[in-house]
Image 1: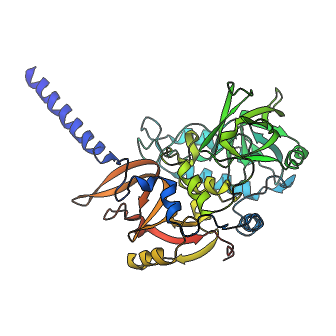
Image 2 (image 1 turned 90 degrees about the vertical axis):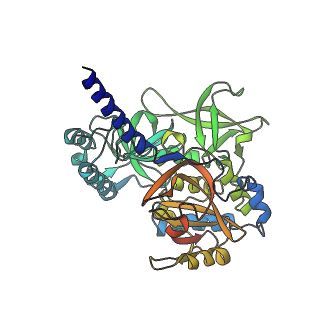
Image 3 (image 1 turned 180 degrees about the vertical axis):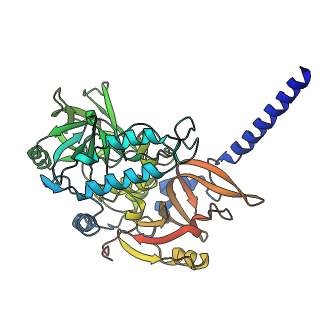
Length: 458
């Protein structure tokens, strides 16, 4: 018995050692990352180094033209307010069919690390109701009334590419804020989900998160020119002027139409809610005046820095999950406070603005670094790499820096292995972070640099 017990203990220890080795490859990143000083984590540091922080980069008119270019030429955003009442099913069909195929063929894992069985996948795919999608879709319109996850398929179950990879739900497409206008294209088989087109993304949203309305209601509300824009990382909405009856929160860049703004403490907004029949009912809502601006901010380097650093250290959220933001949403939210409607995904954002340079696999880092040091404008330049996008802050002692929302970076640990350092937040880094790892540094991975200025048409 003692021998059996000893063998069991030895086996248990070995199992735990293997498990510990796997976990030991993941470490928390330091609060202040390599080559970053305490002062660099403030907007004032970068404002003070910018040659013209208060110059207008794009006027309101030029921003309107840029938005039209993104919408009409790049076709990566949608004019929800003027969306037609009937459309071909082609875009919705392509989306559904593509996502169904990917979901059915990918090897995925559930919350417990078990492989997702084919019959569960089939039930979720069937719920997308693709077979009943008509050739011509009669569109419906609505407003988001609660913070809503937008899903690739009509399910709130989570699925992951690797066991335990819980920060990256493969069904998460986006997250839509309270008050966002949407177009409804299709219903799920169980009637609990709508296929929804938002200003920059398509996906499934639970039906009880949407208040339906007539298209004319869109027009009526948007003819009201007075609006406020959220300029804090998050702003709470209340149902009373004393700000005690909490309703929900909205993220930076969300726009609300004003009912009354006479108070010095609060702003009274039109808050969309849902009546018993599922239709729109506007009620008074209240937001602290300290959370908002009465109009879009001027597009200056100062304001870009201030808005970016407003989100410093906020958690990373893949696809906006848990009310947070990922790398492209971080960029999107910064510039939305200035009225720029950027696309949702980083690859589409990399097509906006004037392309300064594109790098291919043969380009050496010396070429990249030289271009960044001499020809890249701080604050309004975005650096793109496959699957990631960052905002260029500027150069200190010939070292380029950026601010971005990122999950992790890698460090070489010897013997061809990497340690993964979890940042999991908005952070300031230099471009050498990750150097020597299998994935490479940010500088290694940069594919293109765009600038948001008045020369936006490539």
